[in-house]
Length: 333
Image (tube, rainbow, N blue to C red; front, side, top):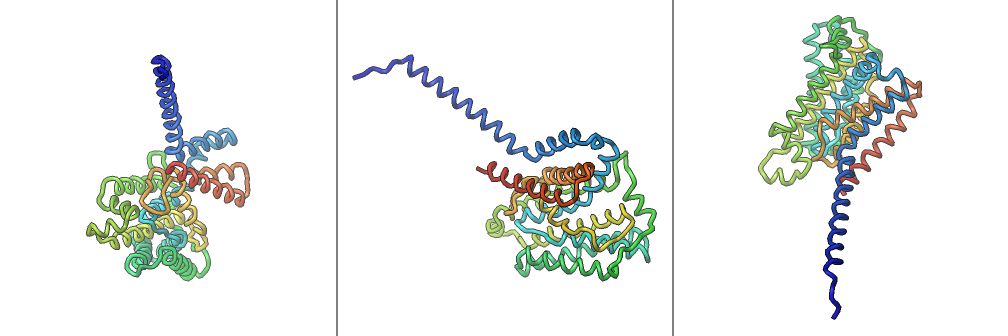
């Protein structure tokens, strides 16, 4: 019978331990890059943009970038809530256009505060219709919001007679182009919506149930929770936020146009997906969604500085979305 060398066995154990520690270290680094891929992607784009264009890191350009993404950031927070319930909202771009037109229309006959309230109310009503169709009528979110997308865009053309409505409201213009502590007011509003969304998701029963519904709707129902109320609520909130974004558009340009917001729903979905949210629901964060919004805005901003046409920008956005989804799949594995 052969005898095992004790020293050789000890050496093999040490090599195995070193190998395991090396694998854990490598896996830890890989997990870090996959977990924080959205933040790292933004950091890389910021560095690359500053190297590509000297005009990128100027105060004027940074503020222009933030103004441009303010409306998308607000819409994306509503889209995040919908997607967390495993839904989808294709109507946000049309609600955005309708909000832009409605605020301009009402300013012709009433005060600014009343016009803002009426515009948000229109967004709430249309969002509520989507919510009722999805939650009570059990209609597929894609179909329900597609129908509301068509209705809202048609209403925008009807209200405006197919032409932009020019506004001369000093108060609205001050909001669209004014500052608070050197930060553009639309950006301040976007950050407020972001903070509120974060607090709702992290520190309220409503937020936890929204995530739970997307994770396992059957289990939530069996727990005695009225799922339909929460599904209805997220679409109503999305409608209000989309109308609010339309107000920002009119405030910045001084024009209520039925043509704005085309494709905005795709940008909002892209921002949420780039931020790591799952279209199957139950996974996503407001912080990463905001990073996704900044990434999309950054791409467009740099392309504009380089005088690149709009069409290549769409191609690049598409590749970024594919990359983000692939990273999600790798991280899950």
